[in-house]
Length: 141
Image (cartoon, rainbow, N blue to C red; front, side):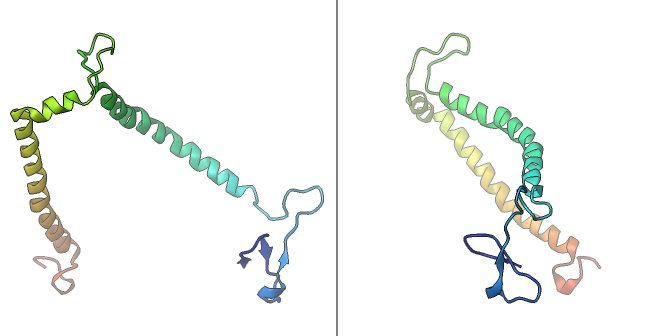
């Protein structure tokens, strides 16, 4: 049983929590606990397994988003150097365009309809396939 406190304490068999003794490493040894380096090794293994996925996410998702935001404040044709800073004028022109506003409206309608139609269908399918409704019986059983 581990006790919270300023030092790590270990309760000896046959003692009460008040009589717990602080565990101290033996002279010349870092730790007397078996597997003390296990936590460090586990963290290192996790880092080694997760780092390739994080690197790919950074390179192929986050970096393009940041670069697109950076490029959007310039008047740029995609080939010449970035030297014509226009700030938020590109956004002002885009939201001032009637075709762009219609496209945004249509996309919003598609998102709302997708949620309204697919949500109940998914719930009904899950209910029928798992037997969670109708008193534990699935649909058609």
